[in-house]
Length: 339
Ligand code: CP3
Image 1: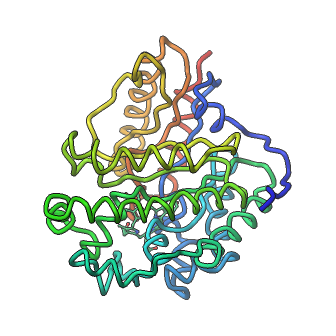
Image 2: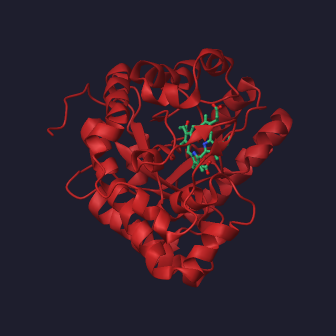
């Protein structure tokens, strides 16, 4: 599939920071920026089921655009409205949002993997995401870059086995120890779909790919190196191969803190990491904490604003006042700027 033609990008701060370059201020976007804290989002959700929105390109585009319009000039990226659980759906599993994710038939034993189709036609199963990306990229008209995303294999495996969110992750972690070979097969199968899904997203118009490994922190460093990292590496290598301009930041939640962003002597781009709960603390707290975060990142970069994308440490939550989100964005603009 040839890459479509789109209007030129006028704000490329995000892409430059992702490549490790110096920027005048930090680019900022927020996970779940199109979400339940916005009244305009809740209004659409009154009449449409969650996955119906994901599967309807016009609705997914409209919702993706809501925060871009509301916070015009303040947000530096759009992230396509979808969910990481569209991949298990594409692999043949039923998922409903009620109000959190629920799999009526989770994978209980390795035999259950046999029930999933061996071949996944990514274009057929996930073409609606590609359509939504293309439509959104056109609608954005170059204002800000468009982020595509996927869950990481281990995080998706956990949902497919637990059947939903889980505090203990007992079932999915049991698989790793009781059925290590079957676990690796499952992780490979998920990775195969993720790679093709991400390549399809770039072809459809995504300019940066985000991998959410929300359950990375549940694994010991040794198990992370065995059951998570090899598949993330495959995604980074194969998912973005040949697609100049697409980088793949990973969001490995709760893994050991990387404070200076230097690995193997190389500066890596960091993203984050204001505690989302600060947005409930009122303007004084938001300003104070954003100032502190900006200073910490600049100090780590020798006083420059470089290789840093400002974001919350996790998704924005439904109770946040949209005006406080606006103030957060304004504070990032103000305090991350290096004169
Ligand atoms: O960031 C964005 O604005 C893009 C949209 C997006 C959603 N989910 C929409 C959503 C993204 C990037 C995700 C990623 C996602 N989904 C992750 C990885 C990041 C993370 O949260 O750790 C995970 C684990 C999921 C699975 C998922 N989807 C859960 C656990 C839930 C329930 C949690 C909650 O906040 O209620 C969802 C539902 C969901 N996905 C909502 C949104 C806006 C809220 C549900 C609704 O609209 O009713």
